[in-house]
Amino acid sequence: MRFGLFGSAQAQRGGVDVDSAQGFKDFVEYNVEAEGLGYHSTFVVEHHFTGFGQVSASLNLLTWVGARTSILRLGTAVVVLPWHNPVLLAEQAATIDLMSNGRLEFGVGKGYRHNEFASFCIPMEEAEERFEEGLALVLRSWTSERRFSHCGKYWHFENIVVEPPTAQKPHPPIWMAAGNPASIRRVAERGFGLMLDQFASPETIIERFNLFKSEVEKHGRTFDPMTVAVARAFYVAKDAADKAIAVERRLAATRRMTSLAQSPAGDNRSSMVSFADTREASEHSALFGTPDEIAGKLETLRSAGIAHVLLNGPGLRDQLHRFARDVMPAFAGPAQMGRPVSGTQTLLPAGATPFGRARGAGGPSPLPLADACGERSE
Image (cartoon, rainbow, N blue to C red; front, side, top):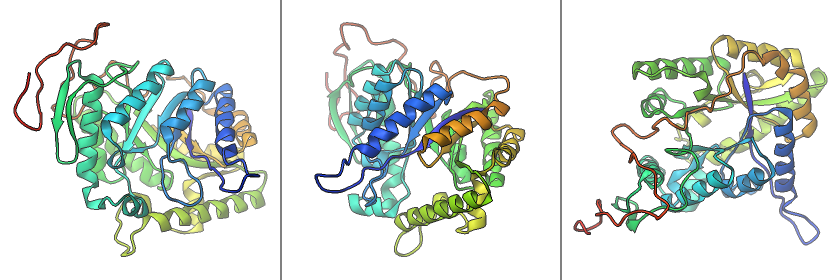
């Protein structure tokens, strides 16, 4: 099995006597240590307006992590496309990929928290369309060797070529978070990696994994288990009492997240807010307990074919060490060390075709523009 990290950092508010950056600095050092312990990747969330200092600028934080590490994969989990200018986003992500020597894992999603859409003054009903238009623009920005223009429902661009180019070709691996069957089928159709959330029960995770596998094979591709990343909360406990405290802490954090995500009418149907809100369910889905208890839960996943786990922990370095020392060795097995989604694979929406030539050193040619917000221009 392959183990990476998933999570966030916190920037504490306060006066001149409070170092608000300390939580972010600790997060960077946490990841530096993780790389040395053999963790494969780190995936960072994006959230806004929480009031408790979650990461809002994922790519900025990953830039710092990338500068301090050399082989750790740098992932977003996820960039919420409806909130971003997709061309600026493509430029920023390409810069990280280039400067990290091709280590970016680009996870994208449409968002699920009501408070964020409400604060951005973007109707949640527009999320799907904004996501689709934004994703198409990001991918075109990364793969087009020609200048292009775009006239869409939400975005207009004229005569653009996105710089810099990405290090990975045709572009960094794309991941999508999905939970319902229709969304999982769309991820498989596109040839992207699938991210499964930390709250679903092991039984639900295995069901979603099997659906994705069958859909990938239905499209005539060989399924690679590393293209499914399963997020799980983890805590290596000293004893039963220590485990109980950790479970209660997780349940409180989960309820806080749900209160932000749910709409006032209670009609948010996202899979992220559909899990059982009980102590038993929280404990069942998480990798909490002694090393043997955690190993038992991991073995359930491994026996179902799951091989890629992203660990969301309390941010304590002793937990990193304990998991690496007491749990990981039992799941080393025959390593599959290839990238989650091959850089030589064309990862574009169905029907899209990237340009075949790489950009020349002299820059793009002044070729005719298409898709402009008026007549075709030269």
